[in-house]
Image 1: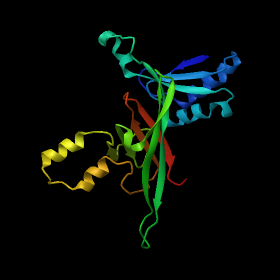
Image 2 (image 1 turned 90 degrees about the vertical axis):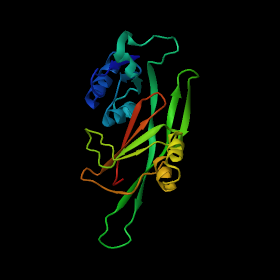
Image 3 (image 1 turned 180 degrees about the vertical axis):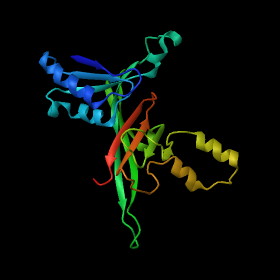
Length: 213
């Protein structure tokens, strides 16, 4: 197997994946593992389609940020410094305008996420309402993720907030913050939305979709 490591301070680029995938078969490697702290969306897409596009299967392996801390953390046999991550599964809903002149509105729904457990070597599918947090960028420019909407489905924090406010809140607000479907929004100039999911290990998993598709 071939290993390629991403930069220490930055995300793995599409160019890095492509060059490694071109070189690996030439040296008789049968599988490419791409390891890094973060990966650009187009690079992740290439990893998924690497066998069809370049001729060698590839897997992205997420490295935990704990590695950046050196000896500051206690090293334990149970520590998981690498993990295989799945991409979030989302669906884009289009709401046609009811009146002429109104813009087309979109909503993004988080359907779920595949999580690999290295202890039992199995993949577990989590539904959208069983993730710690997910964020939406309604006009992703391909470079910087801007949080337009934030959601925290699996948390008991909302119950504590409700008790603290003593009934002075609207239930619909909390239902939305703990939900899996975004508020309606218009398409921006870049014409694509991005969803970033935070899994149980703190990994940031990003998927980008064109709103026109």
